[in-house]
Image (cartoon, rainbow, N blue to C red):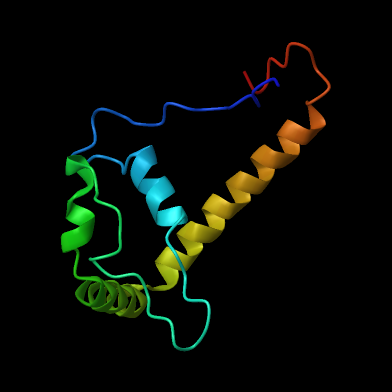
Length: 116
């Protein structure tokens, strides 16, 4: 039997100060067992697969504290948002819409000198 083709992208910029989780970590998280009924327990440290060294930070992350920090940041940003910010965002949205319209109107061009 012929193997199914796979598609992969190299999206790991080297200039970032952190490492992306590995494919192995993503697969282990995606295949974690979930409870099947109300009496089952969620996965814990004893029944989870070991993380690769570069992804060990995931096991030490305090999710409750992280959630509180994100919530506090959201509230702070909401308090600091003013009319100038809304006006700026509306301008960005207008530019996005104009670019989309230009792209759609010139999509038939080959080569497309407008969007290249």
